[in-house]
Image 1 (cartoon, one colour):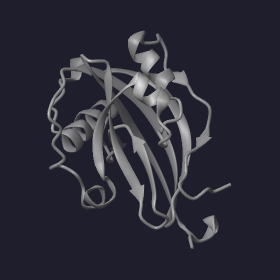
Image 2 (cartoon, one colour):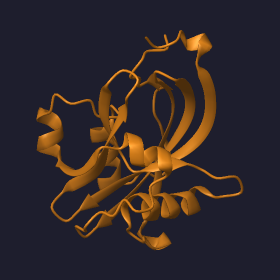
Image 3 (spheres, helix red, strand yellow):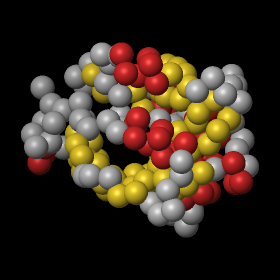
Image 4 (cartoon, rainbow, N blue to C red):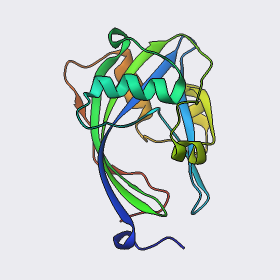
Length: 174
């Protein structure tokens, strides 16, 4: 049984998340998991911003590490939106500030060779999702506002959109 939230390790971090949309109007997502409770969900590529690293540098690094794709800075759109999210997992609670970016890409063969040791364990698979697939799935998809973010990639805002605070958890915190 997962520990009470106050007993779990607490992590605070800032991240970038990237909508990679191909010419077939599909977005790339990874199936992540929490083995402690057998939960699974789909997430966008991205991750923590390293000390001294800009958001753009983090976007380029995370996309390269997680997908094998080497984006050029001029291909990145954004920042599109920002939010604060709490992720409760069986072993930790993550207090996270997400900044969302996007890029239009040609379909490509995903390489996960750059995954961290943890990602090699928790990430189960990847998939290109159409909007129709996402609208009809019963599977958990994070962020919950993915469709809204996709719209922002289609018509980038003049200023970063502030999204509502949210909790997306395999083991709730609240």
